[in-house]
Image (tube, rainbow over all chains, first blue to last red; front, side, top):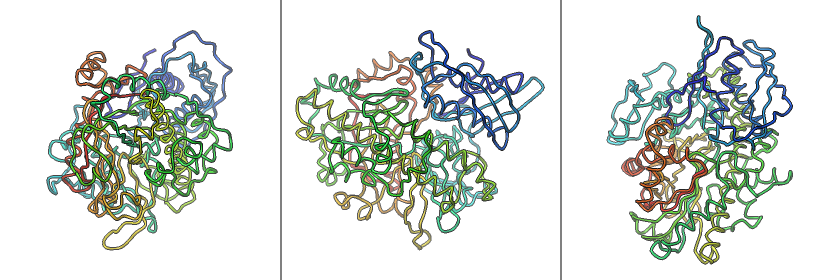
Length: 137
Length: 486
């Protein structure tokens, strides 16, 4: 998987992702984040999906909260997520079922502490959606 | 980075540069960057200076938004930033002004070992440290906590570890805040934050965190060296780590809340990552209570790491750590917000001092400095990159007057991880370091490249500035011989 590009940042890691739809964008950025964090080292069975429900004041906040929610769930449940079923998504609310496999099936590459608001960009243009986000690593 | 920052920077003197508050409407104070001409060129190469200006928007900020010479581009605050807000006059606290790794910090130990006597053992010592200290992404420690202990550690900090036999009371005296800042409120810590930090006590983490075996190669202040028991050719150790997942989650929990405080308290900042709340508001108080828990957890963590390092030395050199004189010189936090008293415009004020990639540097006689260091000033530990040097300095009265008693925290990155990965070959780098007598053990090859000396400013240049500006005084310098990276 490599449907994202890196942006230059002195201390941290920035990425740009593009997708046709907003749902696609939320999925692509989540996949990119876990792709930066780790690499699968052996075949793994996915655990039961977890339901994620978020509400935020606006889209940028929802976007950052989505990523941080996934990082937090990943760290506390010891799971690497690879499957994201977005059930409901608008500018302020999100419902998704996310599933993944145990971290022991992955080789960890980079510890991502959090997604940040710094220079966050999330926009729609004629070709679809584009987002840029900087992760604290 | 191709884009050069074009904002206004006026020279005050050889070590101080001003971004005038007229640069952007909304700046409440000037920005002041501590740097020389050479470092300033690097600083203009990313967006750190813009971030210094952005921090100047914080309500209640006094004097100036300050940046140390190791400043580089962060998120929200620059890394190397210092900002103090007036608690009694609407001053705010910002989780972004502390960062995700709350109380990331560094401790330095001395030994009575001389490099010449143990140089054949450096390889064994480095391997023993690497095998005994859990490191790398998501590493887990063997130090397990029960539910009750979980709360205990958040209040007692390093003392919790000492009570478990992982160190001595002497260690606590040589730790900022004696290893436990008061006002920690475990009830302000979410269950998820607690879960995220669980099983990570006594783990190094990854990225720029490290344990280094070093040798003192320069003495600058003989009197201070004598009083600290430091000499040329002496083996010392440095440990750099933080509050691990617990700190990340606390920062995330409160950043999420405080984004809403921007409208609630009518706070105007140009970057949501500067989300903040008045120190005296319920949100501000809760954040500080939780942040202090993470700070205490980090002090406990570094205490555990030091215990593991002492044990590794004991195993290789077959002597007790006491016999090897492995005593703590000091432990400093460099990502923290603290309520301190400082003189502003001739009046004593209660300030919330954010040090984001900056070290407290109180001068001689300051009551907060441990009794044993009150004559020389608080030890200030400045690690460099793994190929050059690290420094021990002491704080000064001038720092108290100018920078709220703060100095730099390290070398500061100059090259992105991406750029380092593109241009540096791990095998060649390891060979080069080996030829300089530096052995490196790392959990991941990626870390070696990302943390290459070329990715950092020269710490010697950074320390020249803080010493030249008089905000810290050089004591001694060391060079690495054994490096453990996460």
